Image (cartoon, rainbow, N blue to C red; front, side, top):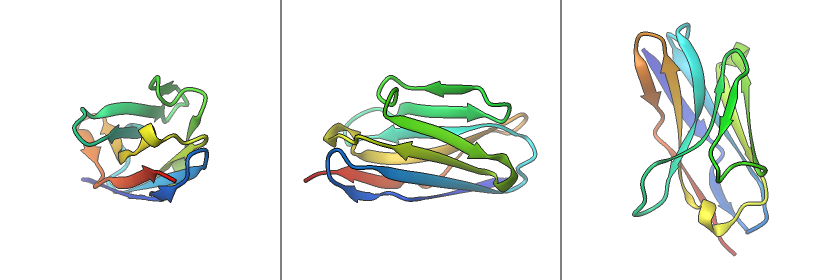
Length: 116
């Protein structure tokens, strides 16, 4: 079983940057995709970015041009570098890991608040 622990959230001013991290532990051998979703109050969970072990990357519309996803496969870690943050980026950001036979595992979420 895989466990995910996110870190790096917090309060930042508009235009600022944050870097989220998510470390996977446990049986990580079947993970082939890791990434991030977010959920703002009263809204549905929204895909932010995903990155496959082999390098394929996908971004949600809200992340294109401002966010960068990266992975360190040796450390079982996925990162989300968020630049030019806007108040509408305020949300709980959830890390996920997709496994061949076990489906998706989710982290507990980390709060990102963009406010002056």
